[in-house]
Length: 92
Image 1 (tube, helix red, strand yellow):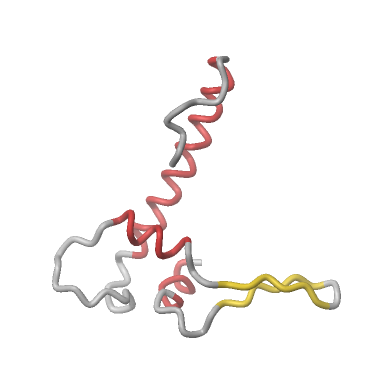
Image 2: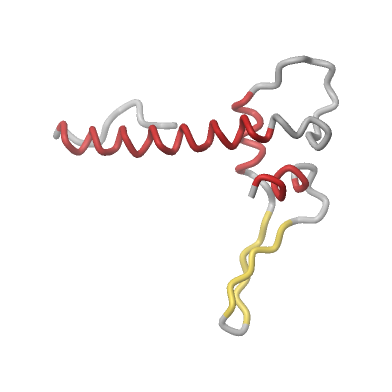
């Protein structure tokens, strides 16, 4: 997650940052584990039993989208042909 070197010399600040990173890591791991339960919607065609959780999390984070602002409304437009769109929509 990129927190190998802590930014502060103060123990209290580093403790807060480690707790925030722990919450973020656990949330991403939960999302990835839940995504693996949708076996019929996963775009992988491999015959392997175990799928790497890190790869699943990376693919879900990098779903193609576009943020637009029109008439004082913010929209998130998702790419229709993304292979992860069905898993993404079921998760979120």
